Image (cartoon, one colour):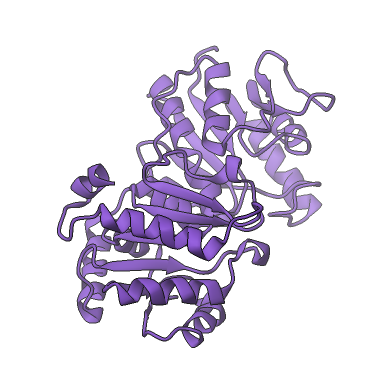
Length: 343
């Protein structure tokens, strides 16, 4: 690939996991082009990526919307004006990491970059066979984007995800932990929410698991957004023990610091599962209506996916078996690094 000075990565997806899964590919891209100015073109909710990963990203642009893409649409005028601006000062390289390219490849072409790359679906529009990879439909999300990098001659720098936590976020968590009497690795986080209702395990099941683990002596912490309070309240109403409800009381960074010191996270297939993967926090991820192969964390030492659609699986029992296995291996006072080796 020719030398490049300005790169734009198109990833206009809304989820936390959608963004964190790009980190290994961005690491590879930065290693290959250490002096390049790399811009993320994404939805408004993705701007934090530049602040969280200043070593990987230099700038952010708001996706203006495009026909066929459900997120971000504003108006024809907004999209046309945005494309005119990018064509007037073209990027050296535009990389389509949004998806299979069935709609997004025409948008990426209209950016007017000197070179374009990405995924395409065989039989549909392919801007350049030399730089567009047939979409690997069965690959895990992290590995899919690393395959694109390698196709472009950009060596992988590892598939590990990451999420840096600041000192201020650690202090914020410490204040929260002190207020609720939480001791490191003596509490468990349960996250019953998910943006898509079809991906939520039932509150009754979360309540049953929470009670079982509370009886073993662990404090139960329920996490989520403020909008997920009804789900949290449903779990609490079906519990016989008293949990700590932190839904809506943590921002993303404080939640990460909370997860760094939890003994275990039990959650649905949603953004927090990818946050745990990035932090190497032991987790059990429950899949109700999503692709395990695509979205389950790669490291099965730390993270155990459970597909509740598989015939013959009693999901609550399976979750408790995995939880007890994790907790048996967890000494009561260890640093996160030591805990990582222990599990």
